[in-house]
Structures are given as structure tokens and as C-alpha cells.
Image (cartoon, rainbow over all chains, first blue to last red; front, side, top):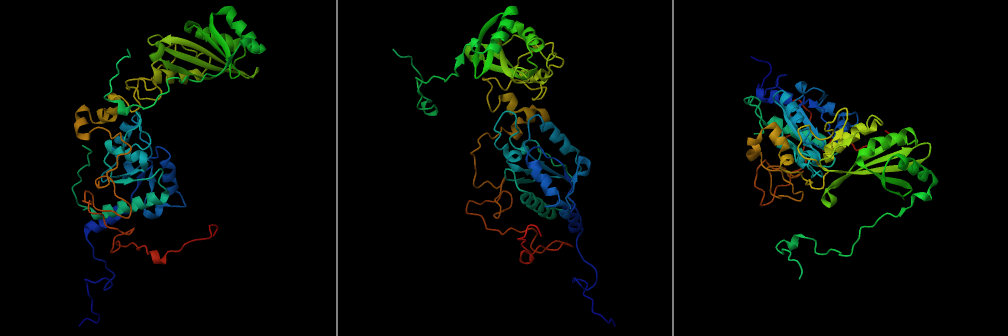
Length: 169
Length: 268
């Protein structure tokens, strides 16, 4: 006769938490989004401010990495010129799967005020974008919110989905 | 009889133009008004042909033949103490007279004077480089080539400086469209995906005023988020800003707005 009634299905019955593999994997992924340092223009300053002590991205597990091999999040912060377009694609291709892209600010979203011959009219012409962040430039809180929304998106995804590389085309 | 002008696109044109408008000109005065400049001009005139010379906004402008550009600037640097080339570039007068105007803005620290050398060249003509006299001319001449297509002889590294090396066209020419020609508009698509991808990716949206209120493919409004592609023509729901899902996240403490503290003292 058991002295204690243990309800295995209820939290608190034992120091055991029941969950699914999907949730655990996505929990890990969404809370260790390592971002590529990719400041292209003035949005880069806001991105740096988000990473610095006052706004402190580290507490969300977002750590900026200087190598695409170690990054899974690309925050395209700033104006993308046509000369640079091939390099952003190359860096995106070098990132390991799974990977996500936040297009930060008007210039990265649509070309912004630079309606000229030398600016890519939206970074989504070159790489697939998961989240568009409006603003010129968005404040660090906005970027934090974008990262939190992206975390929600990652948690909604199936972790065991086939690692099919995202292609723009 | 007046010449016939087509009226079909008359709405697109400005409805009012002042026929009597004349571009304002900055007043020019004679070089003899300034003793230092007059002496400099005499020294240039002694060796080279001077087409025109005047003083404008306290700076002397000397128009010379394009073939003399190197020797004149050498003279200015070595004998007349103009020891800085502060700026140089080209001006596109191709539409008016079929020529580029090249200007060299010089500064003399000892005389405290600024002087501008101007010369004109044809579109296909080239110019000799002054980068061996002034290092600042190195990049300026490359930029001039990049932006206007003015080729400079004897330059150590005659290559585009701002635009990509495989760029076609010279963007600062008056004939170059601001939003780019066909090459420019498809540049990144052609380079990364190839020409066959043009149809899939589609042309650039160049209309900055284009707003599709019901487009949920690209944008959603903060506080009114809906799933991608949802139909919101009947109005979208008002969703409060939440940082985590309703049930919370595994092992992560849920942010509770009620428990948050507003710090009023910034120096706390």
C-alpha cells in the first residue's frame, strides 16, 4: 500500500515534468538564438544597443556571433546595397540549418527612403525573411519584441520537420 | 504657326512653367581686382593658354585646355604654392554641349586662397591623371570614372570605386535614370539566381506609396497580429501584446505585467 498517492500525469506529483520532444527541442532553439552581427547601417546601432547592457539580449539567449557558422539568426539591420546583395546571400547560405531572418527597419524591408539605383528594394528579394520589423530605425525594445515573436514562431514549428533548406526560389 | 506638341500626356507634365525664368548666376568679377590672383594668372598665362578667367565668390576660376591639366596643376603645386587639391570631379554637360566639365578645386595654405581649374573634354576623350601630384586625386579620379565614365590616363589603379566591378552604366550622368536602368533593376537577381529567376522573383516595387491595407502576407500590425495570409477584409481582431503563449513556456517564468515595476528614478 503506497503511502502517497502519486498522480503521474499531474505536475507536482513527482519532480518530473512531462513534455514532448518537439517542445524540448523548440524550447532550446528559441531560447538560444545566436544572431549574426550584421549591422549594415544606422539600424545596426540600435541592434548593438539591444545587445549591450541596458537592453541586454543575453537574457533572451540571443548572443551575437561574428561567424555565420555559429549563428542561426540573421538580423539584417540596415540598407542593403546591390553591391552587397551577393555577400548577404553567401553569408545566409553559410549559416547552419535551422536558420531564421529578421528584416530590421524600413530599408531592409522595402528599400525604405532609398528609392534609387543602388539599393535592393527589400532584402526578401535575396534571402527568405521570417519577420519584418518596421521602423526607421526601430528602437531596441522593438527588436526585442521581434525576437520574442520569432521565439513564438519557432515554438509553433515542428522540431522534427525535415531539414529542408529554405529557398527563396 | 506654333510647333505642334502632343497633348496626350499633358496631365503628367507640370501645368505651369515660367517662360521668362532665367537661372540665377553668381556675380563674376575681373581677376585684376585681386593682386594675388592676378599674379597667379599671369604665371599661368606665361606658359599655357587660358580660355577664361574670373573671380567668383572670392575664388579664382581659370578655364584651360584639357591637354594642359597636368602641367597647370604641377605649376600651381610647385611654383604657386597651391598645396592642396581639396576636390575634383566632373560635371555632365553632355545634353547641352556634348562635353564633360572637369574641375580641380585647389587650396593654398600660405596664400589663404582657393582657386578652381576647369577644363572641358568630349565624352570619349580621356584626361591625364594628377594622382602623382596629389594623392587625393587617386580616389577622386576613380570616382569620376565610376560615376561619369571619364577615363583617366596614367592612373595607378583605374577601376570602379563605389559601384561593383561588373556594373554597367555611369550613375551620375544626367541620362541615367534615378531608379536604375534595366541592368541595375535586375542586378542582384541576375547575379545571385541568374536571369531565368527574373520571372519568379518579379520586378521591384518602386512605388513608395503603395500600401495594401489587407495584405497579410507581408506585414501585420502590432497588436493586430493574424496568421499569415488570413483574410482581414472584415476587420482584424484586437490582440493584446503578449510576450509568451497563453499557457506559458516550459521552464520559463511567464512575464506578468501586474508584477512589473516602473522605475521612475533613472539614477536608481
